[in-house]
Amino acid sequence: RSAPLVLGIETSCDETGIGIVRGRTLLSNTIASSMDEHARYGGVVPEVAARAHLEALQPAIRAALAEASVSLHDLDAVAVTSGPGLAGALMVGIGAAKALAVSLGKPLYAVNHLVGHIAADILDADAGPLQYPTVALLVSGGHTSLLLVRDLTGDVELLGETVDDAAGEAFDKVARILGLPYPGGPEIDRAAASGDPAAIRFPRGLSRASDMARHRYDFSFSGLKTAVARWIEQREAAGERVPVADVAASFREAVVDVLVTKALDACAQHDVPRLLLGGGVVANRRLRDVALARAAEAGVSVRIPPLRLCTDNGAMIAALAADLIASGRRPSTLAFGADSTLPV
Ligand code: KG4
Ligand code: ZN
Image (cartoon, rainbow, N blue to C red; front, side, top):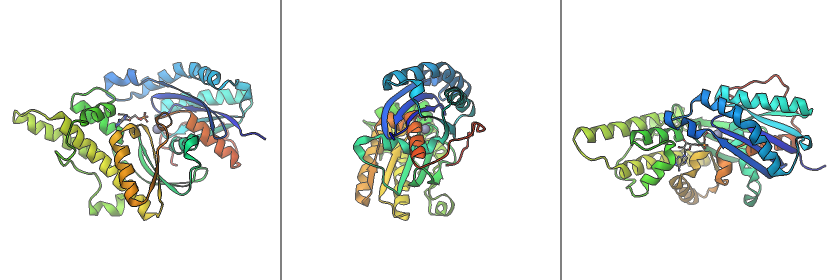
């Protein structure tokens, strides 16, 4: 019996992602983003995202089917993100997935978005099979989580997460303070290229000895954002020029340092020599470089899926469902809804 053909629907934030896989083989990965519509608000507006999903879903499904050269009737299962994410945005994808599954008479799998990010890695054919256990660091505009993955289909443990802003959100907010457009991550990356990362020592959140007992693997970026704002205010009050490149480089260094330090600490403490990165912030050149260099020193191997699989997409949702099917998992009943805080 051949591997299952699965269509995955992802609508937890601002990307409408439709992916089709056959087992662990990627057939299509269509992504429509409402990012431009959120730009003037400086962040994702839930109501705007939900409406955009409704408009983008059907064309995206059609495009994904065409790209994969399959028809709806060929599908063996439908998969959808049921959380965590924006409730209204999730509901649009869930409604579409239920309608498809019921009308086609196919099984439906509700899956966890964060575990989906980890599953993106199994579609990276060049990387070889994902080995267990592995520590996963997921960093995007919506989440910053550190996970211990013993088995994708049943044993994923949340080690820690942000207690306030997500890492990408911090990039977006600091970009705004610096007068740079949204999304701020790529803008800060660009501005930082000519700056000195050691120019200003910005705080590393939850990194004090006293934080280790309760927040060893948690992150906090709102204090960092405030520190950047204060530093700039003081400069301006003194009538001095703000060195944008140095501020961007020093801010980026603080974020990257704390992300990599905690991820490698988790590897060391749990005796896991493997680290997987995922989420849109993985686009950050400095994060990739520092993670690769410090992991090599620590004897940890690093896996980074191609960027199109790191940002939110439907292929990772389909891939996770295909693995769940292969492991014998029963489909979901139709009773599930959106769970904006769904645990792993
Ligand atoms: O995963 P993603 O595409 O979407 C969601 O968060 O749902 O991630 C987008 C986030 C934004 O906050 C954006 O500013 C950030 O990733 N980002 C970056 C870079 N490129 C995108 N952050 C830092 N450096 C980058 N080069
Ligand atoms: Zn995500």
